[in-house]
Length: 295
Length: 314
Image (cartoon, rainbow over all chains, first blue to last red; front, side, top):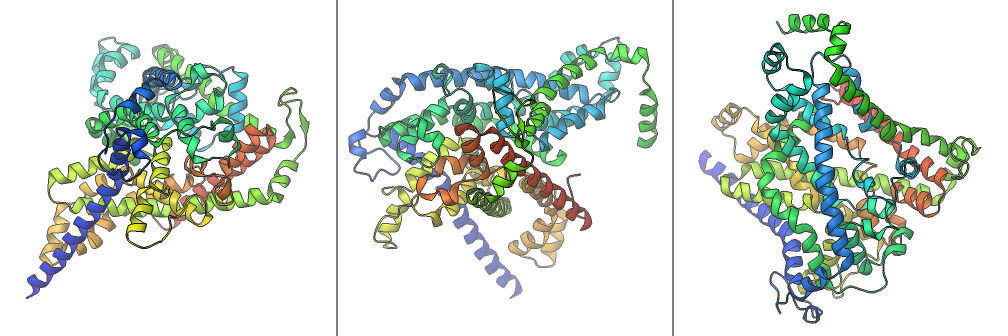
Protein backbone atom coordinates (compact mmCIF):
# COMPACT_ATOMS: atom_id res chain seq x y z
CA UNK A 1 0.00 0.00 0.00
CA UNK A 2 2.70 2.40 1.06
CA UNK A 3 4.95 1.80 -1.95
CA UNK A 4 2.01 2.28 -4.32
CA UNK A 5 1.24 5.69 -2.85
CA UNK A 6 4.86 6.76 -3.24
CA UNK A 7 4.83 5.50 -6.75
CA UNK A 8 1.91 7.81 -7.43
CA UNK A 9 3.83 10.77 -5.98
CA UNK A 10 6.84 9.98 -8.10
CA UNK A 11 4.65 9.71 -11.18
CA UNK A 12 3.24 13.20 -10.62
CA UNK A 13 6.77 14.42 -10.12
CA UNK A 14 7.88 12.81 -13.39
CA UNK A 15 5.00 14.43 -15.28
CA UNK A 16 5.76 17.86 -13.82
CA UNK A 17 9.40 17.34 -14.76
CA UNK A 18 8.61 16.48 -18.38
CA UNK A 19 6.26 19.45 -18.74
CA UNK A 20 8.76 21.88 -17.20
CA UNK A 21 11.62 20.73 -19.40
CA UNK A 22 9.50 20.75 -22.56
CA UNK A 23 8.29 24.29 -21.91
CA UNK A 24 11.84 25.36 -21.08
CA UNK A 25 13.30 23.93 -24.28
CA UNK A 26 10.50 25.31 -26.48
CA UNK A 27 10.67 28.80 -24.96
CA UNK A 28 14.45 28.85 -25.30
CA UNK A 29 14.67 27.54 -28.85
CA UNK A 30 11.54 28.87 -30.54
CA UNK A 31 12.58 32.53 -30.87
CA UNK A 32 15.95 31.52 -32.27
CA UNK A 33 14.52 29.04 -34.79
CA UNK A 34 11.86 31.56 -35.76
CA UNK A 35 14.55 34.13 -36.49
CA UNK A 36 16.42 31.65 -38.69
CA UNK A 37 13.19 30.79 -40.54
CA UNK A 38 12.41 34.46 -41.19
CA UNK A 39 15.94 35.06 -42.42
CA UNK A 40 15.43 32.47 -45.13
CA UNK A 41 12.00 33.71 -46.14
CA UNK A 42 11.12 35.98 -49.01
CA UNK A 43 10.84 39.58 -47.76
CA UNK A 44 7.47 40.53 -49.29
CA UNK A 45 5.90 37.20 -48.40
CA UNK A 46 6.98 37.59 -44.76
CA UNK A 47 4.87 40.74 -44.34
CA UNK A 48 1.80 38.47 -44.27
CA UNK A 49 3.13 37.03 -41.01
CA UNK A 50 2.54 33.46 -39.92
CA UNK A 51 6.10 32.18 -40.29
CA UNK A 52 6.92 29.89 -37.41
CA UNK A 53 9.52 27.16 -37.60
CA UNK A 54 10.18 26.96 -41.32
CA UNK A 55 10.37 29.52 -44.14
CA UNK A 56 7.23 29.63 -46.32
CA UNK A 57 8.79 31.03 -49.44
CA UNK A 58 12.47 30.14 -49.37
CA UNK A 59 14.90 32.84 -50.42
CA UNK A 60 18.59 33.63 -50.04
CA UNK A 61 18.08 37.23 -51.01
CA UNK A 62 18.20 38.53 -47.44
CA UNK A 63 21.66 37.11 -46.99
CA UNK A 64 22.74 38.60 -50.30
CA UNK A 65 21.54 41.98 -49.06
CA UNK A 66 23.23 41.56 -45.69
CA UNK A 67 26.55 40.56 -47.21
CA UNK A 68 26.29 43.54 -49.51
CA UNK A 69 26.00 46.05 -46.67
CA UNK A 70 29.32 47.83 -46.38
CA UNK A 71 28.78 48.88 -42.75
CA UNK A 72 28.10 45.30 -41.67
CA UNK A 73 31.20 44.07 -43.51
CA UNK A 74 33.39 46.71 -41.86
CA UNK A 75 31.80 45.86 -38.53
CA UNK A 76 32.47 42.16 -39.04
CA UNK A 77 36.10 42.82 -39.89
CA UNK A 78 36.66 44.96 -36.79
CA UNK A 79 34.79 42.49 -34.59
CA UNK A 80 36.93 39.59 -35.78
CA UNK A 81 40.08 41.66 -35.27
CA UNK A 82 39.17 42.82 -31.78
CA UNK A 83 38.11 39.30 -30.80
CA UNK A 84 41.36 37.70 -31.99
CA UNK A 85 43.78 40.39 -30.82
CA UNK A 86 41.90 41.19 -27.63
CA UNK A 87 41.59 37.55 -26.61
CA UNK A 88 45.22 36.62 -27.27
CA UNK A 89 46.63 39.73 -25.60
CA UNK A 90 44.36 39.49 -22.59
CA UNK A 91 45.01 35.76 -22.18
CA UNK A 92 48.77 36.28 -22.22
CA UNK A 93 48.81 39.15 -19.73
CA UNK A 94 46.28 37.62 -17.34
CA UNK A 95 48.22 34.34 -17.40
CA UNK A 96 51.50 36.10 -16.62
CA UNK A 97 49.90 38.03 -13.78
CA UNK A 98 48.22 34.90 -12.40
CA UNK A 99 51.58 33.15 -12.57
CA UNK A 100 53.23 35.92 -10.59
CA UNK A 101 50.63 36.04 -7.81
CA UNK A 102 50.50 32.25 -7.53
CA UNK A 103 54.26 31.97 -6.78
CA UNK A 104 54.45 30.92 -3.16
CA UNK A 105 57.70 32.79 -2.51
CA UNK A 106 56.88 35.97 -4.38
CA UNK A 107 57.57 39.02 -2.22
CA UNK A 108 54.37 40.93 -2.99
CA UNK A 109 52.04 37.96 -3.42
CA UNK A 110 49.30 39.24 -1.12
CA UNK A 111 49.69 42.90 -1.97
CA UNK A 112 49.45 42.39 -5.71
CA UNK A 113 46.41 40.11 -5.38
CA UNK A 114 44.65 42.66 -3.21
CA UNK A 115 45.51 45.45 -5.66
CA UNK A 116 43.48 43.59 -8.31
CA UNK A 117 40.70 42.28 -6.09
CA UNK A 118 39.86 45.88 -5.13
CA UNK A 119 39.26 46.70 -8.80
CA UNK A 120 36.42 44.18 -8.77
CA UNK A 121 34.47 46.23 -6.26
CA UNK A 122 35.48 49.82 -6.82
CA UNK A 123 35.55 51.57 -10.16
CA UNK A 124 35.36 55.14 -11.32
CA UNK A 125 32.19 54.75 -13.35
CA UNK A 126 31.31 55.77 -16.87
CA UNK A 127 32.11 59.48 -16.92
CA UNK A 128 35.58 59.45 -15.29
CA UNK A 129 36.45 56.48 -17.51
CA UNK A 130 35.25 58.38 -20.56
CA UNK A 131 37.33 61.41 -19.60
CA UNK A 132 40.38 59.19 -19.03
CA UNK A 133 40.11 57.44 -22.41
CA UNK A 134 39.69 60.78 -24.08
CA UNK A 135 42.83 62.19 -22.50
CA UNK A 136 44.76 59.01 -23.37
CA UNK A 137 43.56 59.40 -26.98
CA UNK A 138 41.92 56.00 -26.87
CA UNK A 139 38.67 57.39 -28.23
CA UNK A 140 38.23 57.32 -31.98
CA UNK A 141 40.70 54.48 -32.27
CA UNK A 142 40.78 50.71 -32.47
CA UNK A 143 42.85 50.46 -29.26
CA UNK A 144 39.84 51.27 -27.08
CA UNK A 145 38.56 47.75 -27.82
CA UNK A 146 41.73 46.04 -26.67
CA UNK A 147 43.75 48.08 -24.18
CA UNK A 148 41.22 48.89 -21.39
CA UNK A 149 40.03 45.29 -20.98
CA UNK A 150 43.46 43.66 -20.97
CA UNK A 151 43.45 42.62 -17.34
CA UNK A 152 40.37 41.36 -15.56
CA UNK A 153 40.66 40.54 -11.89
CA UNK A 154 38.07 37.78 -12.09
CA UNK A 155 39.77 35.99 -15.00
CA UNK A 156 43.12 36.39 -13.28
CA UNK A 157 41.78 34.87 -10.06
CA UNK A 158 40.37 31.85 -11.89
CA UNK A 159 43.78 31.23 -13.48
CA UNK A 160 45.56 31.82 -10.18
CA UNK A 161 43.40 29.20 -8.46
CA UNK A 162 44.14 26.73 -11.23
CA UNK A 163 47.89 27.40 -11.07
CA UNK A 164 47.91 27.03 -7.29
CA UNK A 165 46.45 23.58 -7.78
CA UNK A 166 49.41 22.43 -9.86
CA UNK A 167 52.01 20.30 -8.04
CA UNK A 168 54.73 22.51 -6.55
CA UNK A 169 57.32 19.76 -6.99
CA UNK A 170 57.53 20.47 -10.74
CA UNK A 171 58.57 24.05 -10.12
CA UNK A 172 61.02 23.07 -7.39
CA UNK A 173 62.83 20.48 -9.48
CA UNK A 174 63.08 22.92 -12.38
CA UNK A 175 64.51 25.51 -10.02
CA UNK A 176 67.13 23.04 -8.83
CA UNK A 177 68.10 22.64 -12.49
CA UNK A 178 68.68 26.38 -12.54
CA UNK A 179 65.55 27.41 -14.45
CA UNK A 180 64.41 31.01 -13.94
CA UNK A 181 60.75 31.99 -13.42
CA UNK A 182 60.16 32.77 -17.08
CA UNK A 183 61.43 29.37 -18.17
CA UNK A 184 59.15 27.76 -15.60
CA UNK A 185 56.20 29.76 -16.91
CA UNK A 186 56.70 28.94 -20.58
CA UNK A 187 58.02 25.38 -20.24
CA UNK A 188 56.08 24.01 -17.27
CA UNK A 189 53.12 26.10 -16.08
CA UNK A 190 51.69 27.30 -19.39
CA UNK A 191 51.50 23.83 -21.02
CA UNK A 192 49.75 22.46 -17.92
CA UNK A 193 47.26 25.33 -17.91
CA UNK A 194 45.77 24.68 -21.34
CA UNK A 195 42.29 23.83 -19.96
CA UNK A 196 42.01 27.04 -17.91
CA UNK A 197 43.47 29.06 -20.80
CA UNK A 198 40.71 27.67 -23.02
CA UNK A 199 38.14 28.70 -20.42
CA UNK A 200 39.38 32.26 -20.12
CA UNK A 201 39.89 32.59 -23.88
CA UNK A 202 36.27 31.58 -24.36
CA UNK A 203 35.00 34.13 -21.81
CA UNK A 204 37.05 36.96 -23.27
CA UNK A 205 36.23 36.06 -26.86
CA UNK A 206 32.48 35.98 -26.20
CA UNK A 207 32.70 39.29 -24.35
CA UNK A 208 34.66 40.85 -27.23
CA UNK A 209 32.34 39.47 -29.88
CA UNK A 210 29.21 40.72 -28.12
CA UNK A 211 30.43 44.20 -27.11
CA UNK A 212 28.64 47.16 -28.61
CA UNK A 213 28.65 49.85 -25.97
CA UNK A 214 32.30 50.83 -26.48
CA UNK A 215 31.77 51.23 -30.22
CA UNK A 216 28.76 53.46 -29.57
CA UNK A 217 30.38 55.63 -26.90
CA UNK A 218 33.98 55.91 -27.99
CA UNK A 219 33.94 55.37 -31.76
CA UNK A 220 30.63 56.72 -32.94
CA UNK A 221 32.31 59.20 -35.23
CA UNK A 222 34.66 56.65 -36.75
CA UNK A 223 32.72 54.44 -39.15
CA UNK A 224 35.91 52.53 -39.97
CA UNK A 225 36.05 51.25 -36.36
CA UNK A 226 32.42 50.24 -36.05
CA UNK A 227 31.61 46.74 -34.79
CA UNK A 228 29.19 44.07 -35.94
CA UNK A 229 26.99 44.26 -32.83
CA UNK A 230 26.77 48.05 -33.05
CA UNK A 231 25.80 47.93 -36.72
CA UNK A 232 23.22 45.27 -35.89
CA UNK A 233 21.89 47.52 -33.13
CA UNK A 234 21.43 50.39 -35.57
CA UNK A 235 19.69 48.05 -37.99
CA UNK A 236 17.33 46.73 -35.32
CA UNK A 237 16.84 50.14 -33.71
CA UNK A 238 15.18 51.35 -36.88
CA UNK A 239 12.04 49.58 -35.73
CA UNK A 240 12.47 49.82 -32.01
CA UNK A 241 11.61 53.54 -32.05
CA UNK A 242 14.08 54.32 -29.35
CA UNK A 243 13.09 57.91 -29.12
CA UNK A 244 13.39 57.51 -25.35
CA UNK A 245 17.14 57.67 -25.20
CA UNK A 246 18.72 60.65 -26.83
CA UNK A 247 21.81 58.64 -27.62
CA UNK A 248 20.12 56.10 -29.84
CA UNK A 249 17.86 58.66 -31.40
CA UNK A 250 20.99 60.19 -32.81
CA UNK A 251 22.12 56.84 -34.11
CA UNK A 252 18.99 55.33 -35.53
CA UNK A 253 18.21 55.86 -39.14
CA UNK A 254 14.70 56.71 -40.17
CA UNK A 255 14.27 53.96 -42.71
CA UNK A 256 12.72 50.74 -41.47
CA UNK A 257 14.60 47.59 -42.34
CA UNK A 258 12.38 44.64 -43.34
CA UNK A 259 12.04 41.95 -40.70
CA UNK A 260 13.62 39.33 -42.95
CA UNK A 261 16.81 41.32 -43.40
CA UNK A 262 16.99 42.05 -39.70
CA UNK A 263 16.62 38.33 -39.05
CA UNK A 264 19.33 37.43 -41.55
CA UNK A 265 21.73 39.96 -39.98
CA UNK A 266 20.93 38.57 -36.53
CA UNK A 267 21.67 35.03 -37.70
CA UNK A 268 25.00 36.09 -39.20
CA UNK A 269 25.97 37.83 -35.96
CA UNK A 270 25.14 34.93 -33.68
CA UNK A 271 26.27 32.09 -35.95
CA UNK A 272 29.97 31.85 -35.02
CA UNK A 273 29.26 31.65 -31.29
CA UNK A 274 26.29 29.32 -31.62
CA UNK A 275 28.42 26.95 -33.72
CA UNK A 276 31.32 26.98 -31.28
CA UNK A 277 29.93 26.95 -27.76
CA UNK A 278 28.57 23.37 -27.61
CA UNK A 279 32.11 22.05 -28.11
CA UNK A 280 33.58 24.21 -25.37
CA UNK A 281 31.14 23.26 -22.62
CA UNK A 282 33.54 21.46 -20.36
CA UNK A 283 35.85 24.47 -20.38
CA UNK A 284 33.34 27.04 -19.24
CA UNK A 285 31.88 24.68 -16.67
CA UNK A 286 35.32 24.25 -15.05
CA UNK A 287 35.91 27.98 -15.22
CA UNK A 288 32.63 28.85 -13.53
CA UNK A 289 33.11 26.22 -10.88
CA UNK A 290 36.57 27.53 -9.97
CA UNK A 291 35.32 31.12 -10.10
CA UNK A 292 32.28 30.42 -7.97
CA UNK A 293 34.27 28.66 -5.29
CA UNK A 294 37.02 31.22 -5.26
CA UNK A 295 35.28 34.56 -5.26
CA UNK B 1 52.25 19.42 9.06
CA UNK B 2 50.75 22.03 6.80
CA UNK B 3 51.29 24.60 9.51
CA UNK B 4 54.97 23.76 9.84
CA UNK B 5 55.26 24.16 6.08
CA UNK B 6 53.63 27.55 6.11
CA UNK B 7 56.01 28.72 8.80
CA UNK B 8 59.06 27.63 6.86
CA UNK B 9 57.77 29.40 3.77
CA UNK B 10 57.30 32.56 5.82
CA UNK B 11 60.89 32.35 6.99
CA UNK B 12 62.11 32.02 3.41
CA UNK B 13 60.32 35.20 2.55
CA UNK B 14 62.96 37.37 4.19
CA UNK B 15 63.88 40.01 1.67
CA UNK B 16 67.45 39.40 0.61
CA UNK B 17 69.24 40.76 -2.44
CA UNK B 18 69.65 37.24 -3.69
CA UNK B 19 65.90 36.67 -3.48
CA UNK B 20 65.13 39.96 -5.22
CA UNK B 21 67.53 39.10 -8.00
CA UNK B 22 65.97 35.69 -8.41
CA UNK B 23 62.50 37.23 -8.61
CA UNK B 24 63.56 39.92 -11.07
CA UNK B 25 61.18 38.74 -13.80
CA UNK B 26 58.25 38.59 -11.37
CA UNK B 27 59.01 42.08 -10.10
CA UNK B 28 59.23 43.54 -13.61
CA UNK B 29 55.87 42.04 -14.56
CA UNK B 30 54.34 43.27 -11.30
CA UNK B 31 55.60 46.76 -11.94
CA UNK B 32 54.12 46.84 -15.44
CA UNK B 33 50.71 45.52 -14.38
CA UNK B 34 50.57 47.87 -11.41
CA UNK B 35 51.26 50.85 -13.67
CA UNK B 36 48.53 49.58 -15.99
CA UNK B 37 46.15 49.03 -13.07
CA UNK B 38 46.77 52.45 -11.60
CA UNK B 39 46.03 54.10 -14.94
CA UNK B 40 42.95 52.14 -15.91
CA UNK B 41 41.35 51.28 -12.58
CA UNK B 42 42.58 53.71 -9.93
CA UNK B 43 43.04 56.92 -11.90
CA UNK B 44 39.32 57.12 -12.81
CA UNK B 45 38.66 57.34 -9.07
CA UNK B 46 40.44 60.70 -9.10
CA UNK B 47 37.77 61.66 -11.64
CA UNK B 48 35.27 61.57 -8.77
CA UNK B 49 36.52 65.07 -7.99
CA UNK B 50 34.46 66.20 -10.98
CA UNK B 51 31.29 65.54 -8.99
CA UNK B 52 32.28 68.29 -6.54
CA UNK B 53 33.08 70.93 -9.11
CA UNK B 54 31.58 72.57 -12.14
CA UNK B 55 33.78 70.61 -14.48
CA UNK B 56 34.77 72.25 -17.73
CA UNK B 57 36.86 70.08 -20.08
CA UNK B 58 38.87 73.11 -21.15
CA UNK B 59 39.92 73.85 -17.56
CA UNK B 60 40.58 70.27 -16.52
CA UNK B 61 39.93 68.50 -13.24
CA UNK B 62 42.26 70.60 -11.15
CA UNK B 63 41.25 74.06 -12.33
CA UNK B 64 37.48 73.79 -12.60
CA UNK B 65 35.32 75.70 -10.14
CA UNK B 66 34.70 73.85 -6.86
CA UNK B 67 31.01 73.67 -5.97
CA UNK B 68 30.92 71.25 -3.04
CA UNK B 69 27.79 69.15 -2.83
CA UNK B 70 25.74 71.27 -5.22
CA UNK B 71 25.58 68.53 -7.85
CA UNK B 72 24.37 66.00 -5.31
CA UNK B 73 21.76 68.45 -4.05
CA UNK B 74 20.54 68.91 -7.59
CA UNK B 75 20.39 65.14 -8.08
CA UNK B 76 18.25 64.48 -5.05
CA UNK B 77 15.89 67.32 -5.85
CA UNK B 78 15.47 66.04 -9.41
CA UNK B 79 12.24 64.04 -9.65
CA UNK B 80 13.63 62.15 -12.63
CA UNK B 81 16.62 60.97 -10.63
CA UNK B 82 14.45 59.75 -7.77
CA UNK B 83 12.32 57.85 -10.25
CA UNK B 84 15.45 56.45 -11.85
CA UNK B 85 16.63 55.17 -8.45
CA UNK B 86 13.27 53.49 -7.93
CA UNK B 87 13.43 51.86 -11.37
CA UNK B 88 16.97 50.60 -10.89
CA UNK B 89 16.20 49.10 -7.49
CA UNK B 90 12.89 47.61 -8.54
CA UNK B 91 14.24 45.94 -11.66
CA UNK B 92 17.43 44.90 -9.87
CA UNK B 93 15.51 43.20 -7.09
CA UNK B 94 12.93 41.62 -9.39
CA UNK B 95 15.71 40.28 -11.62
CA UNK B 96 17.70 39.01 -8.67
CA UNK B 97 14.74 37.13 -7.24
CA UNK B 98 13.36 35.70 -10.49
CA UNK B 99 16.83 34.89 -11.81
CA UNK B 100 17.98 33.09 -8.66
CA UNK B 101 14.74 31.17 -8.21
CA UNK B 102 14.63 30.05 -11.85
CA UNK B 103 18.27 28.97 -11.92
CA UNK B 104 17.90 26.92 -8.74
CA UNK B 105 14.62 25.41 -9.91
CA UNK B 106 16.12 24.52 -13.27
CA UNK B 107 19.22 22.98 -11.66
CA UNK B 108 17.12 20.93 -9.22
CA UNK B 109 14.81 19.64 -11.93
CA UNK B 110 17.53 18.99 -14.51
CA UNK B 111 19.31 16.93 -11.87
CA UNK B 112 16.20 14.74 -11.74
CA UNK B 113 16.28 13.95 -15.47
CA UNK B 114 17.48 10.36 -15.52
CA UNK B 115 18.42 9.89 -19.19
CA UNK B 116 21.97 11.15 -19.56
CA UNK B 117 21.62 11.98 -23.25
CA UNK B 118 18.45 14.02 -22.76
CA UNK B 119 19.98 15.82 -19.81
CA UNK B 120 23.05 16.77 -21.84
CA UNK B 121 20.95 18.08 -24.75
CA UNK B 122 18.70 20.16 -22.48
CA UNK B 123 21.71 21.59 -20.70
CA UNK B 124 23.43 22.51 -23.95
CA UNK B 125 20.27 24.26 -25.16
CA UNK B 126 19.97 26.09 -21.84
CA UNK B 127 23.36 27.82 -22.34
CA UNK B 128 22.55 29.09 -25.81
CA UNK B 129 20.92 32.42 -24.87
CA UNK B 130 23.79 33.36 -22.57
CA UNK B 131 26.11 33.51 -25.56
CA UNK B 132 23.89 35.86 -27.53
CA UNK B 133 24.47 39.59 -27.12
CA UNK B 134 21.79 41.78 -25.56
CA UNK B 135 21.42 43.39 -28.98
CA UNK B 136 20.30 40.05 -30.39
CA UNK B 137 18.20 39.07 -27.38
CA UNK B 138 16.30 42.35 -27.26
CA UNK B 139 15.85 42.22 -31.04
CA UNK B 140 14.37 38.73 -30.82
CA UNK B 141 12.20 39.72 -27.89
CA UNK B 142 10.96 42.77 -29.71
CA UNK B 143 9.89 40.58 -32.62
CA UNK B 144 8.22 38.03 -30.36
CA UNK B 145 6.22 40.73 -28.56
CA UNK B 146 5.31 42.79 -31.62
CA UNK B 147 1.75 43.06 -32.89
CA UNK B 148 2.31 40.14 -35.27
CA UNK B 149 4.70 38.29 -32.96
CA UNK B 150 4.22 34.86 -31.44
CA UNK B 151 2.95 36.10 -28.08
CA UNK B 152 0.11 38.17 -29.52
CA UNK B 153 -0.51 35.38 -32.01
CA UNK B 154 -1.08 32.88 -29.19
CA UNK B 155 -3.11 35.33 -27.11
CA UNK B 156 -5.40 36.08 -30.06
CA UNK B 157 -5.79 32.44 -31.03
CA UNK B 158 -6.59 31.47 -27.47
CA UNK B 159 -9.18 34.27 -27.37
CA UNK B 160 -7.47 35.67 -24.30
CA UNK B 161 -7.42 39.12 -25.86
CA UNK B 162 -9.35 40.44 -28.82
CA UNK B 163 -6.77 42.95 -29.88
CA UNK B 164 -3.00 42.66 -30.12
CA UNK B 165 -1.31 44.12 -27.04
CA UNK B 166 1.31 46.78 -27.67
CA UNK B 167 3.73 45.57 -25.02
CA UNK B 168 6.18 48.41 -25.44
CA UNK B 169 3.67 51.22 -25.10
CA UNK B 170 2.32 50.58 -21.59
CA UNK B 171 4.52 51.02 -18.52
CA UNK B 172 3.04 48.07 -16.60
CA UNK B 173 4.51 45.50 -18.98
CA UNK B 174 8.08 46.77 -18.89
CA UNK B 175 9.42 45.34 -15.62
CA UNK B 176 8.00 41.86 -16.27
CA UNK B 177 9.45 41.96 -19.80
CA UNK B 178 12.89 42.84 -18.45
CA UNK B 179 12.62 40.10 -15.82
CA UNK B 180 11.62 37.59 -18.50
CA UNK B 181 14.48 38.68 -20.75
CA UNK B 182 16.94 38.08 -17.92
CA UNK B 183 15.45 34.74 -17.02
CA UNK B 184 15.44 33.67 -20.67
CA UNK B 185 19.06 34.64 -21.17
CA UNK B 186 20.68 33.53 -17.94
CA UNK B 187 18.74 30.66 -16.33
CA UNK B 188 20.83 27.88 -17.85
CA UNK B 189 24.08 29.70 -17.29
CA UNK B 190 23.25 30.54 -13.70
CA UNK B 191 22.34 26.91 -13.03
CA UNK B 192 25.89 25.70 -13.76
CA UNK B 193 27.22 26.48 -10.28
CA UNK B 194 24.23 24.86 -8.59
CA UNK B 195 24.51 21.75 -10.75
CA UNK B 196 28.16 21.35 -9.88
CA UNK B 197 27.29 21.80 -6.20
CA UNK B 198 24.66 19.08 -6.57
CA UNK B 199 27.16 16.59 -8.00
CA UNK B 200 29.24 17.03 -4.85
CA UNK B 201 26.43 15.76 -2.60
CA UNK B 202 27.14 12.41 -0.93
CA UNK B 203 24.94 9.72 -2.60
CA UNK B 204 24.61 7.95 0.79
CA UNK B 205 22.19 10.69 1.87
CA UNK B 206 19.79 9.77 -0.94
CA UNK B 207 20.09 6.06 -0.20
CA UNK B 208 19.32 6.65 3.46
CA UNK B 209 16.32 8.80 2.52
CA UNK B 210 15.07 6.13 0.10
CA UNK B 211 15.16 3.55 2.90
CA UNK B 212 13.07 5.94 5.00
CA UNK B 213 10.57 6.00 2.16
CA UNK B 214 11.23 9.43 0.69
CA UNK B 215 9.96 10.05 -2.85
CA UNK B 216 11.81 12.03 -5.49
CA UNK B 217 10.21 15.31 -4.51
CA UNK B 218 11.01 14.82 -0.84
CA UNK B 219 14.63 13.97 -1.64
CA UNK B 220 14.91 17.14 -3.69
CA UNK B 221 13.35 19.24 -0.96
CA UNK B 222 15.05 17.75 2.09
CA UNK B 223 18.46 16.74 0.71
CA UNK B 224 19.43 18.49 -2.51
CA UNK B 225 18.16 21.95 -1.61
CA UNK B 226 19.70 22.13 1.90
CA UNK B 227 22.98 20.72 0.58
CA UNK B 228 23.42 23.49 -1.99
CA UNK B 229 22.42 26.24 0.43
CA UNK B 230 26.01 27.49 0.98
CA UNK B 231 26.43 27.87 -2.80
CA UNK B 232 23.12 29.70 -3.03
CA UNK B 233 24.21 32.09 -0.28
CA UNK B 234 27.55 32.90 -1.95
CA UNK B 235 25.99 33.50 -5.36
CA UNK B 236 23.27 35.61 -3.77
CA UNK B 237 25.86 37.77 -2.00
CA UNK B 238 27.81 38.28 -5.22
CA UNK B 239 24.63 39.21 -7.06
CA UNK B 240 23.38 41.59 -4.38
CA UNK B 241 26.50 43.69 -4.95
CA UNK B 242 25.61 43.76 -8.62
CA UNK B 243 21.94 44.67 -8.24
CA UNK B 244 22.51 48.23 -9.41
CA UNK B 245 24.94 47.22 -12.15
CA UNK B 246 22.38 45.07 -13.91
CA UNK B 247 20.40 48.09 -15.00
CA UNK B 248 21.68 49.13 -18.33
CA UNK B 249 21.74 47.07 -21.50
CA UNK B 250 18.21 45.62 -21.55
CA UNK B 251 16.61 48.82 -20.34
CA UNK B 252 18.54 50.93 -22.81
CA UNK B 253 17.77 48.66 -25.74
CA UNK B 254 14.11 47.95 -24.94
CA UNK B 255 13.07 51.30 -23.50
CA UNK B 256 11.41 54.04 -25.52
CA UNK B 257 9.94 57.47 -24.99
CA UNK B 258 6.49 56.18 -24.08
CA UNK B 259 7.67 54.17 -21.12
CA UNK B 260 10.77 56.00 -19.99
CA UNK B 261 9.18 56.70 -16.61
CA UNK B 262 9.67 53.02 -15.77
CA UNK B 263 12.56 52.04 -18.05
CA UNK B 264 15.27 54.58 -17.26
CA UNK B 265 17.91 53.45 -14.78
CA UNK B 266 20.82 55.19 -13.05
CA UNK B 267 23.23 54.12 -15.79
CA UNK B 268 20.98 55.50 -18.51
CA UNK B 269 20.64 58.73 -16.53
CA UNK B 270 24.43 58.98 -16.29
CA UNK B 271 24.75 58.38 -20.01
CA UNK B 272 22.11 60.96 -20.84
CA UNK B 273 23.48 63.72 -18.64
CA UNK B 274 27.14 62.86 -18.85
CA UNK B 275 27.69 62.00 -22.48
CA UNK B 276 24.75 63.46 -24.38
CA UNK B 277 24.35 66.67 -22.37
CA UNK B 278 28.06 66.94 -21.56
CA UNK B 279 27.38 67.55 -17.88
CA UNK B 280 30.28 65.41 -16.68
CA UNK B 281 29.91 66.58 -13.10
CA UNK B 282 26.31 65.49 -12.74
CA UNK B 283 26.99 62.17 -14.48
CA UNK B 284 29.89 61.50 -12.14
CA UNK B 285 27.82 62.37 -9.06
CA UNK B 286 25.12 59.89 -10.11
CA UNK B 287 27.81 57.29 -10.73
CA UNK B 288 29.31 57.83 -7.28
CA UNK B 289 25.90 57.37 -5.71
CA UNK B 290 25.57 54.04 -7.50
CA UNK B 291 29.03 52.83 -6.42
CA UNK B 292 28.42 53.87 -2.82
CA UNK B 293 25.10 52.03 -2.64
CA UNK B 294 26.61 48.91 -4.25
CA UNK B 295 29.45 48.76 -1.75
CA UNK B 296 27.08 49.43 1.14
CA UNK B 297 24.85 46.56 -0.02
CA UNK B 298 27.78 44.15 -0.20
CA UNK B 299 29.04 45.11 3.25
CA UNK B 300 25.59 45.04 4.88
CA UNK B 301 24.60 41.65 3.52
CA UNK B 302 28.03 40.18 4.10
CA UNK B 303 27.89 41.24 7.75
CA UNK B 304 24.39 39.85 8.00
CA UNK B 305 25.53 36.51 6.57
CA UNK B 306 28.46 36.48 8.98
CA UNK B 307 26.15 37.08 11.97
CA UNK B 308 23.88 34.26 10.92
CA UNK B 309 26.84 31.96 10.46
CA UNK B 310 26.21 31.54 6.73
CA UNK B 311 28.87 31.38 4.04
CA UNK B 312 30.11 34.80 3.10
CA UNK B 313 32.37 36.62 0.69
CA UNK B 314 34.99 38.01 3.04
